[in-house]
Length: 459
Image (cartoon, rainbow, N blue to C red):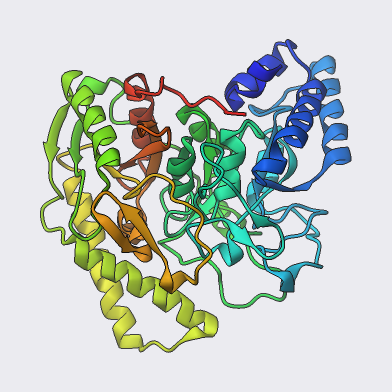
């Protein structure tokens, strides 16, 4: 059963359909593993034990009757705490929101259920989803399974830690500043930030009356975390697409990837940048992967796309973050300044589009470092250590900011570990709406992963 708990969601669903294991047996085993593993990691912080076991039994009954079932039928999974799940609290880690209970499912949860998934509980988040670490006053600190003295990243750190330690088969998170990609990199799992606005964020908001939107249209994204790239694709397929009035006029489909063989891909890459210098151990892992890709026959060119000023674009991303918090009531912002910044954002988006006429994917670090030790200091006082010396904490956003600024699909894929055993992720950025090009490339390079290919759960 331990080996089964290390399987991908796709594999687990196939075993259930073949009746090699029942959903009830799998869900019961997963709860037992969580009870044993979670106390030292603190990734899963809310449960639906009775409801999940009842739903698993119903899933088995449906198979016994020969009913048509969804692609995730009977597969137990957790979901980021910020998503509404009927009957559970949605707190965002904030004690002010500790009491209200969600009355209905978020769109993502409803669509996962429709695909057959069983939501067994929720994973921990950074306070108000606003940190690179995962800690909050309600549920405490989440630890990295690779080294419990270190962070799993944030804000979807509980999601990545649960996956890495075998406490879930699939997860779903949110990503504005790298909140999917950073935890995926730090924990050695796969994470996809889809093309912006592909997956509806409805039901992913703090409790209370409707107020200022929590999402930044065109920048933020809702997406999956998993142990394989194939699971990311499946999760995207069952959750993406318009809803409400838009669904009356629009449909969504996942376009085919540009290529399926590694040798056919055209690749541009950057391993380092003076704005956010990358630790040598991360550069080494990325460089080894680039060498293997080159040896496999892919066309590879180094350097930022023409017309890019990554430092300036990082500042633009910071401006948009500041604008968001100004809307939340923490500051002021002139309309003129916002329009000017948004024009620059669209210019950057156009430059990326031109670059993808000549290449298929852009590769770069997900983060400057592997997972760093927990740091309880105030945000503005924090630094993190690199082989180039200490750096300012906010620089961790640099490498994830570029896809976010332009709303591009981007995945973090595990490519190995540092000499001390910490996971390293490679970021794969692709053209607008071509998420499957990103995912297929992630699949083609898995054989070059020094840690052995697709991620296996630890724990």
